[in-house]
Length: 298
Image (cartoon, rainbow, N blue to C red; front, top):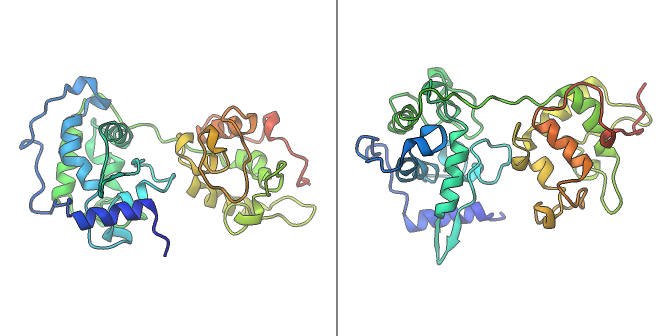
C-alpha cells in the first residue's frame, strides 16, 4: 500500500498520541474564553475557540483508516471535492500540526460550511450526522448518531456564537447541459504533448463516444456525475479537474501522467472551465475556447 503524506501524518499523530480528545472530555464554548474579536473574523465566528476546540476534532483518531473509523484529515486534505478544504498537515521533527497561517486558512474554509443564522442547517453539522436523526449522506461515514453527541453540541454552540445575521454560503450548481455541449469534447481533443483524457480516465468521466458519433444523453450524464467527484462547485482552486492538468509552475499538481493541458491559469480554455465551475456558464452555447468539431454531433 502506498503511504500518502496525509496517511503518514495521521500515523504520526497516532504514534505521538497528541489526539487526546474523547466523547467525555470535549470542552465547551463556556469553558474556553474568547479572546478574538468576533467582528473581525469570518461570519463573526471565534477563531481562538475554533483553533483550541474545533480544529482538533478534524485530526481526532477514531480507531481505523476507513469511513467513520478514520480522522477527517484522511479525506478532507486530499480530495479536492471534499468541501471542508483542510490544508495538509505540516510535518516537522516527527510532529504533525497546522501552522498559524494554515489554521487561519482552515478557519476560513470551515466558515463557508456554517450558518450562524440557523446553526442546525450547517453542512459542517449535517454531513457527519446520522440521516435517521436529520443528517445527510457522507462518504466518510457517520460520526454522530445523535444531536446530543458532545462533538455535535460543541460545534453547534460555536456556530451559534457567530453573527446571527450571516447565512450559509450559497450552493453553486455546475450545469449539465454546458458540460455535455462544451466540456465533454475536451476529453477526446488532446493538445500537443498531452494524451487524450480517454487514455486514462475512460472508466470515469472521459467515456469515449462511439466512432463518428456524439455521446448519448445517458453516457453524458454518467460522465458528468463521475466528473463531479473532481469538482468543488464554486471553488475552482479546490477542484482537481482544474488542478491536475495545470503545470506546476502555474500552481498545478506535481504529477499528472497524462501531461499538461494548461501552462497558465490564464489559458482561455481553463478560464472557461473555471467560469463553469463557478456556476457562470450554463446552457449549450460554448465560448470560443470550448468549441470543437470532434466528435461530430447529429
